[in-house]
Image 1 (spheres, one colour):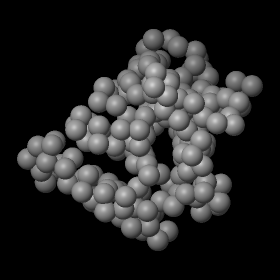
Image 2 (cartoon, helix red, strand yellow):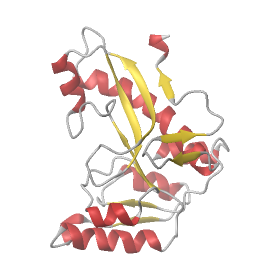
Image 3 (cartoon, one colour):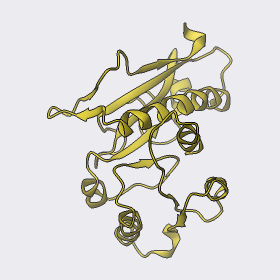
Image 4 (cartoon, helix red, strand yellow):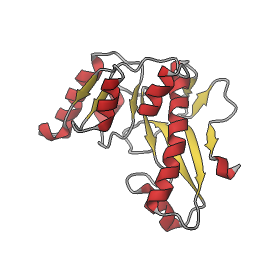
Length: 200
């Protein structure tokens, strides 16, 4: 979230971040956003009797701002199908693996356990199937022989901070198109793959 907001403040992304919403009150991201003049909200999942009730309240907060896109960043809640379908084509997430490999949690440990040589992150449209939406862009890092889940996560995070602001800029410029076959097209872009310098 901070990387996206900073890219907007630096005029690298021609968008307005109208609000930052968290499901956790004690969030460093909320403090940071507030210091930068962005409206913040907390919708705590612990205060709701069901996932549906939480999603309905979250949706009502989002709709106050009529956003063109809803970008998820570290929002570790599984959203209901009704919520996802309401924002179909406008709900975007970043996942720390090269989807469709390693959906769900503990992706870096999964990657190391499988012995893959490349790992990374994926920015994708959200669908009711968890971590399986149409891919907008991907970032790749090399897996090193002495990697731990923590060291691998650190390198993946670096490329996440490059790829997600770039996708936000594409979205703001109206260059991202979700095609009828559920593939993504980005205008005036030669590649939607971001590669770590260590692989070049």
